[in-house]
Length: 218
Length: 131
Image: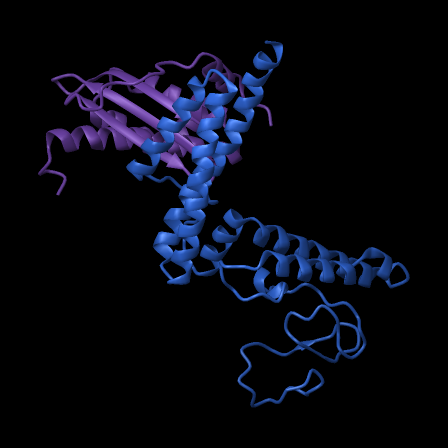
């Protein structure tokens, strides 16, 4: 099938074939530019993986993600549209916004996991408002938070961060394994654990700022 | 985002911070979390022989609204029966603290925490009735 192929009416199309807003020619789903007239196309509703031409999976080649993102970003650079119509400029900007959104979501493992859970139809992902009552996870977090609150010096904070970092790596590996075997419940559980660990590491950074001046003064 | 005066008041002077012995048969413990914020909330009640909540403690790691919501609930439940405590609605908490829409979930967490504490107490005393 070539890009210029005329869509036939008996094709098993799930949606009406896309048409270029500028020349009316056919446009492949997810194409940034019209193959016929080269006009930039609206971002549409492609998911973040499709937008960056990556397989829909948690495992991801970070270098490949970067390559695809920067290549697409160059194509959408505002300088390239300086002499184009206001409409084309506006469309290129909305493409750039969608592209950045896709990149930022896929780049961060926690955001990628939450996004993938959502795509796979999990109703309550860790980035949405809901209450959990997993006693083991919450008890563990409560103890770590208490230890952080009581940490008197940088070394004590550092020990808490080091443990959380190691556990975050462990959670990340568990998320990858769970997605690889399509175990969404386990993927969601481990993503929630990662969410809590990242929050703890974030708070520990603030705690370090709290104890650091005392050390610097000594 | 500015916190309401009541949130600030509870945040700066939280009521009933602390822990009760979770293994004490007269104590019910609710431990809940909101993963979106990374919040953890523990709310405990001590219940007298005639079913009245005589003490309540909380420990919350979260934002000001989450702390204020749990602090307020510990104040409200003291002197109440278990049934009364279980009917506390997040909307009452949110209204009392004038929580903005983005912080409503903090009041939901506090409602879920007191419900969990009541359920835990009941499970200790009435292991069969829950089935």
